[in-house]
Length: 504
Image 1 (cartoon, one colour):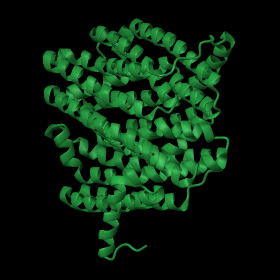
Image 2 (tube, rainbow, N blue to C red):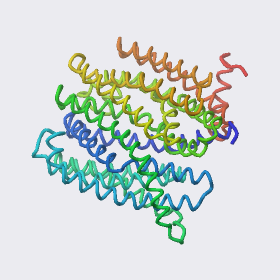
Image 3 (tube, rainbow, N blue to C red):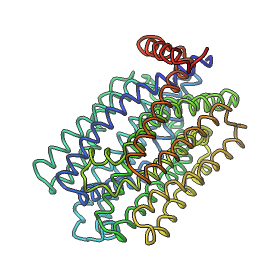
């Protein structure tokens, strides 16, 4: 694959998954806006805590089978090994079925213990118990997504995201609107149900597994690989969700449920707006990198290309968020969520480092280095949770945002060093320049925003527009984009040339 065609592939997947993510984000923001209006910060905080508990249980129960399943299918597809694909699909199906059932039963059995530990309220045991259904559905839908991603069905993955978000919103908001706070459980379960139903409809359209039955020995071999790698990936993911759960529990106990709502609001915005970039990495980049990981030169080129495109796409959005943050929070939530602004400013600075670190982290996943991946995630979450624990009494809710930034200050050099050891990776000069420019711009806008909201907005919007125009021109030149986007680029270049600001 040539460099230009590789850039086109990255842009194509980014726009498909990114477009779906943007729609998903808008739908999700509408959903949480309604919840914020109906239930307030306390309701948003409780939903975040229960979602986090369900995610923790799902991560443990899934045993990393989705991540490893994607890797196994993508690896077989890279070898054009249809028998290997069929074997991985069968192993993924039966393994997921058993894990989903066992995980749901285990959560139900531990409902009293978890209600006491997480909610500090034993009377909520039945509420926690019903999350078992959400855990089973989450594990099942995760394996279906892994199958679609492994086979690089990019369009279907995007459709599943959009349609499940719409169904989730209709069912979830309907439950809250109809039942009020009593409908909170139905709101939480609506997400896993919608994801499972829609993804099942698309998986059912895939070509069936070959007629000859897959030998039991082949299935056992796949399960052994999935268990070996999956356990390490599961522990790494578990560390992540447990770290988030620990931070949420600390905030609730130290500062109260309203502060937990502020943290949840900032966290959701920080995670959501980057979905259009980071989502494409897991959907298209990870399978491509897995197929090429043994060719270090190709793999390193792919990592640099993905990092460059991610920085150029995310930069204008990140700067715009920094500029308009106080008004965005008030628009998407309510004026009561204003304290979330200080958290989000620090988190967005951390997002610059997060964008640069994610492509490197996939090198560890693609090489199947489960223990190394577990180590990096554990170090990162230890920094996040530990710093929050130490700083929360002194700095208040703002400590969570500062801890997020410190986490990626530690994480980025760690994964870079590990990637360099495994594949000899080095950032290209262009990527280093992009990172430096974006980091300086974000720090400047953040400093202006802390001084005065309107000054931050003016500087941030100017920086976002400048970065956006430069990114548009560079992306079009990289991939030789045609069509409407190409015409837009040509018009932009001609306009800038008239101003004397662009040559060549």
